[in-house]
Image (tube, rainbow, N blue to C red; front, side, top):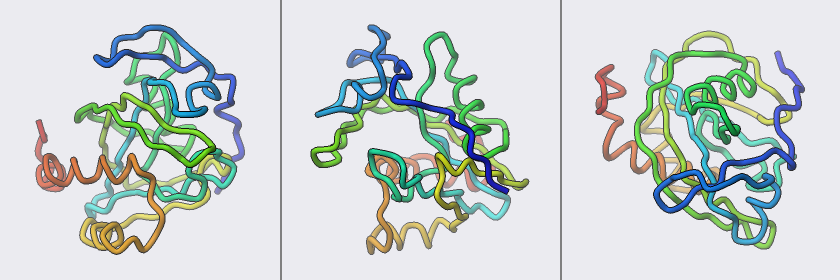
Length: 190
């Protein structure tokens, strides 16, 4: 199944933050991603199935930044007045058509330039969860999806077999070094 819901637009207001992730205002998404980017709050979600495979998505070709690149399960921005817990659940459902318990891991700040088109400059909160049920993608957001084993993913990343988003590369390296063993063993990775 596939849906075509419009769940985001360039005029959507993103939450601007300072170097300590404190809210300092809002600005349109198009402005936050233009040029070198403006620091704003975001999140990334990593969903594993019962076989400990990670759900990857290929970003829609309609996206202005990193179109048709493989990335983590889901990533987006919280809305003004929305808790991060509400935001991650909302967006996972909007993009992939399911909900599951999500657990906070860590947050980090990064900047990634996509040529002259624009940039991501985000304070990103990272979550993980587990799901073995059906997936109903929103084709405005997701061009393709697949589950991949962790060792196969590591090989793909090392050999650059597919284009992957820069934030996913950073997040996966940090997860692999700090949390992955506990997540795969079903333990609390804190």
